[in-house]
Amino acid sequence: MNKILGNWYVAGECRAPGLLSPVESEILSASDKVEFGEEEPDLDLAYDQLEAIKRRLKQLQANLIYPPADPCELTGTSRTASEDNGSLTDNQVMLQQLRRSNSKLRCQLRLQAQHLQSSRKHLRLLEDMRCQLGNRLRQMSAQLDEFEQFKRSAQHQAGLCIERNEQIKATKIDKQNFLTQLSKLNIHYTNHMRLMAPLRCHNQLRYDLSLDLILTRIFLHALFGNMVEDWKFCIRRLKKNCRGVRLRMLPPTDFPPIWPWRD
Image 1 (cartoon, rainbow, N blue to C red):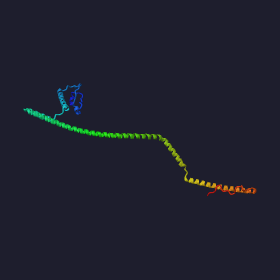
Image 2: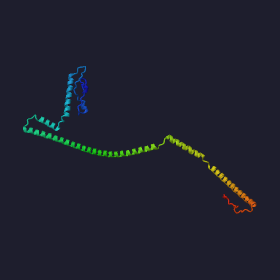
Image 3: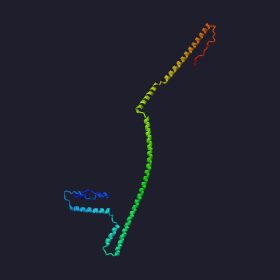
Image 4: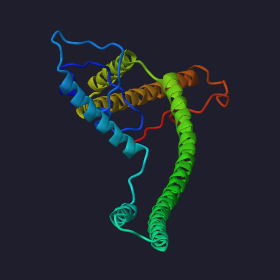
């Protein structure tokens, strides 16, 4: 329809609130800015199109504003129209009106019952949704409590991490300094290992020292023996020269060795 109207009518699109998108596209509003083509349009075709639009608008108005007629009421109306052709008495007319009212009330009662059933279903659905929302709220409350505990533990862990970081900063050593100290220690221990003598050298040194010690003891023993002999010789000389001198004041001739020999 829009393609047909586009040949002779160009206007803006009016979107009515509350209508579906397929229906919105079919409802057009008039506009003051109407532009006509160069060729003069066919008036009969335009009139037919306007009539079709009018019927469509009436149908949409009936669907939007007025509810569809009850089938029972339509049936009663058709029966009444078919029976009006003959002659009816007043009682028959009243009976027909009562029947029509009865059928109408029955239809309304059925509609109300359907509405009641749908309302009950809707209420049950709302109750289920309320229960679900309550469960969701309880879960969210529990999750919030867990989050508070997690936040406290995270703050504690963050404090520990900060304290540990400060300790590391206070006691850390630079890479270059560490390598320097390590190289110094390596050189120190390497030099110590190089200066260590083998076991045979120790044994040789021990043997040499023991031999020197033995020779020193022999030398001292011989020296002491010579000194004792010299002392005895000196005493004998004194006895010969000074016979009148008392020799009791002199020290004894046999002196014990100062450095006793030990095997």
